[in-house]
Length: 597
Ligand code: ADP
Image (cartoon, rainbow, N blue to C red):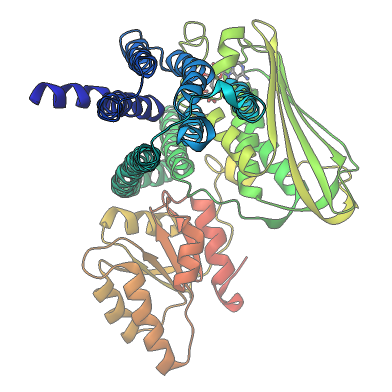
């Protein structure tokens, strides 16, 4: 008995496909039923012919079991079984066992149904058609040549035969249905379990991602604080030193710290894109200033390397557009920076053109062509992948992380644009970006007259942009070097600066004196910038006076601008803060009567 159980378990083991398992069940139950049939016929006393046929059927079932399991050909076994049983053995039994008055039509029907259960593929339709033809043939033979059929003589045996057939057919189908629903139930439970496992895995992934984002925000904050000190203090050296050597060293520090900053920004952007937090924020902008700024920002760098940067643009491009100007700037700056980086001699052409999509939309086509080192065929396949750099040996001496183009590609995708590159090693490259933009003003761009970009020219010949000796500003930061830098950067404007090292100290000072602007750090221990701002707002309700509060933050990851404006800040500045940016922001919020130009 144990052995039998073991064998049956082997026939319905999980690794087998459901159809295969089902066939094994049918065949084993069939063998058992046929043996019972033989016993029954022995009791009732049918002829030797029936025994032989039943024996043949048993042999056929066992052969199919062997074919399906030992040779692992379940479909072939199904076909052999169906054809042999339904086309030959069953018709013979029909004539031997009493024809249409017997239970044979029921067995014929069972045989035909089995075919559908155990044979797969189009061949089942063929076998079925054959089954029906055989059925029709035997019934017609019964009708036209009743002498061919050996009828049952015993009425009792006839009823017995019927009862036995009903019990057999119902039992077989009962087993099949039970088996199918057990499998279904089992699969459903497995699916449910997998689903809950997946939900848990997802939750863990989300948590890991959140942890990564928080880690990056912290890292960015922690790294920005010292860079703020380096850049700020260095700017003071550049402003105040007249010794050529010192200025030269300070310029190197400036370049290095900006490279470091760009690297942190790239990593932050990359993680924002990866975690799906990068949002495209369309706003109206003037193409003129975008092109001018990008050009003048890179012009100096190109000149320093002995390269010429040419600007070639279509004067008919609509001048006012709607799109994410900041991200377009980032894309152009990435491409121009790469062109300068990877070109040793010759020129870079920054070309801007457009094509009209419809009355409201254009495709802005920006291309950057250089006469530089070019990219090999293999290199071209991976330059848009993150952290991948092409032709490492050739570009060994050039600093880079392999993130710039990956970010550029993702940003263009987010804006429904496209980027492509044509390049030949040793001959140069052309990167072309196409970005759809809405038109706000159809007025043609016209000629761009060069405007000196304040950002890229601050430094040796610094001169403050305004003076405001009567203005009072409260600077709140828990790290002394940070407020010291603000103080130094604004030194020449003559503004009176009061400092506070915590939210609480800020509120005390704010309460006891008047300030024209508050520069408030975000991440501070105990009471952070946002909580402090809330308290300031409560106080404003009583005084009915509004003091502009500007967030001064090293937190650049969380889509900072919107977050700070939503929290109630009037504006925000990111650290490391640049002298020119700081002055521009202050002048915007100071009462006009306090400013002497
Ligand atoms: P990286 O920080 O290395 O410059 P990018 O993602 O900006 O990273 O560029 C990926 C790679 O593509 C670079 O390492 C360089 O091999 C190649 N590349 C990009 N722009 C140019 C170019 N204008 N000329 C030649 N090679 C380029």
